[in-house]
Image 1 (cartoon, rainbow, N blue to C red):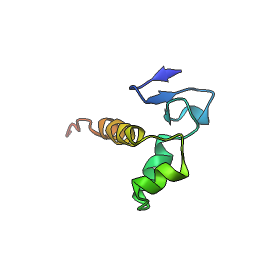
Image 2 (image 1 turned 60 degrees about the vertical axis):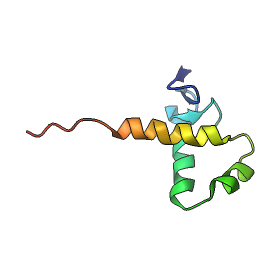
Image 3 (image 1 turned 90 degrees about the vertical axis):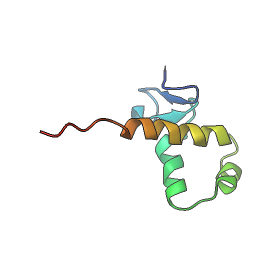
Image 4 (image 1 turned 135 degrees about the horizontal axis):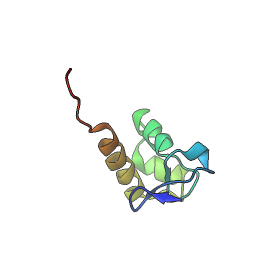
Amino acid sequence: MKYLNDRITVDPGQCGGRPCIRGMRIRVSDVLDLLAAGMPIPDMLREMPDLEADDISACLKYVSKMVDHPVVAA
């Protein structure tokens, strides 16, 4: 298992190698999809008791770093 930060992990044998929360089967994309759909964080935490507020923050930080790359104009 590869640790991308203290809460985001990637395991090729789990969830197709997609980034997950702390080795669980909660994918970063699942958390982001729920946020994008407008689900309030307290509701998300109630629905997924293993999820922590810091996990949600880690998802946002992880994705922010993934999309923050230089674009070189040709």
